[in-house]
Length: 530
Image (tube, rainbow, N blue to C red):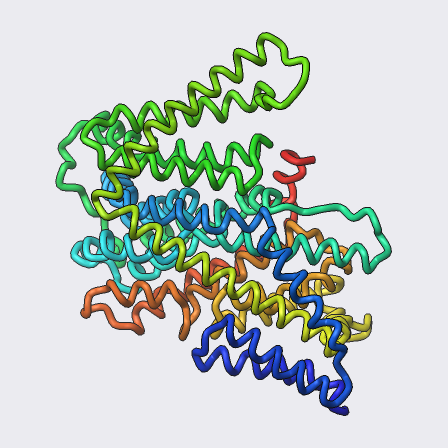
């Protein structure tokens, strides 16, 4: 093989090596791409026109409406973390399930699913539950490996249960890949795939994963009772009605927020970006409700927000139209009144949050995380252009094309390319972050797999579950790092690693189930969006 045939592979290998050294992701992607572009130009095997396309790529990224959801969802999750929703949920769930074997572990999983559906921030969930639940579980005799594994795995549910940052990023990358694949196939009026499709597709697989977690914890409690003993709550003498009422009061605010965000998407009322704005407002009102002495302004503003959502589903509120009917004038007037009530409650909540130094920390965290994501996007765009200019597309396509006589094709049939890509992504997850894999690997393999006829929503959910394992696989699983940072010194790192292994296996089992039953991911988007 000559240099022209191998330079793309060398570029990919060098990128992975530099990333493993700990160099910042955005500068690694952009820097390595520029170096190999210069090498390609020197040897005459790279067209400089690819680099001229970079400004258009960056402009497209910065004006992409779907990506506006990223800072909004980050703000929403960070604000909810500061509002102490997790503490109240965990305390009340432990009252409900603690008296049964494995009850605390099940409580952690349910709270993790609730937080995933309302925040989508893995680190915040793991740290919060590590601080709140882990000491109690250890004190009550839980096996340290099971306790830490349950908390770390519950935290990763924020990767697959929408609203999730990874689903927003994957949805945008796969939408572009789907359009490119159809154009390559000669389809000049291509179908589209949106982030909303991916959100809808991930709901059922996400809750299947929650069910598998609970099933494992229940079986573990049944077969090894000493590992997860029953833990009666200190208030066990309280009437069941009191416990249920407290639990419902703790569940009500985040459930309303979940319904407002996901419900507005699934009902077709709002795009994911608009729903993210609803979530950010709702999270601010919820945090304000917990901080204000007088709760009425936050309650009135939240009610007004829900009223606006309901009103928009029944009436056209656009004012810049001709021939408005009397009923439409009434609807617009009601909408203005509801907006005024919401702004009033928001203003009081923001003032209170600012005085408590909550708002500034949330804004700083949101700006930091969002900047990181968008800088990586720019570096990934440059990497993708140079990789394609060096012939990387043809190399990957040849790698994923199997003869019918090959062993992999005989075993897996048409699924052989998916099996290879999933295996590569799983192995990379041991060493690379999910954002790096999303922006480096998915743009390369996505168009090829989609050109082979695989459903884009199903493929996106498969990739999201696969990327979820990267949070639990040592040595660089971020959920393990987060938990190690808050776990007591009595818990050894090897116990945290050992506890995560069964949940990684469960995630891989979910991947197999989804590969065998694709309608788990495609049925709901087809039902909702047609």
